Length: 242
Image (cartoon, rainbow, N blue to C red):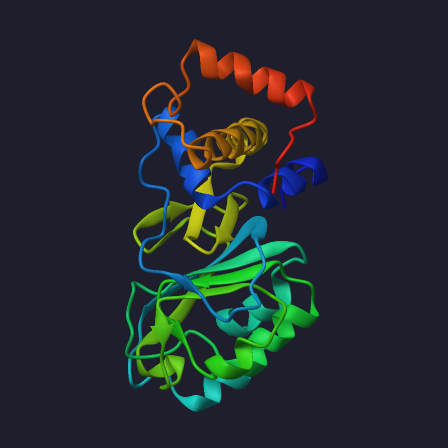
């Protein structure tokens, strides 16, 4: 397991939106980083930040995927629930298949109790009302009642996967907010966090300007005059900041 990301980087990313992160990654030539179609489950969801721990599914087969296999200690889905490290995000590649869930209330509760930072699946979960009450952030495509064996066969843990069409490597940094989920290549996390945090601060100033009646041109993006006003705003202690 790779060394955990610095707590400072984690703290900064909690204050940087998925939208800002996608812009920062675009500047670095990365476009396929946002897991489209996924949404947070429940109004209690807080910002999600953590290293990726991955689980890969292939289509199920009727002679193999029977109820009895769920009791096996070596079943990859069950292992994922017990082996995803605290502070990590369990990311599941289920081929965006919605005929079967990739987990339910008991499994998600166990992950939450173990201190896992969040769960992302490009399929669905069952027991969503129960899961929505957990403090752990969870992102899904939609609610799915049938059990996973209807459509999914769990095969691999902590290998490169594709989640909602986005490549995710173990240890990449997963960030989620109200807009959805973005994947940051691990080696870029520190600089994206720092530059993204500064971008958020600058955009707060720009928003204040726009709310005060400033025109778009010259304000966003800032021209030299607006840039100078921004520095003066910083020196003054960021007055009016929400």
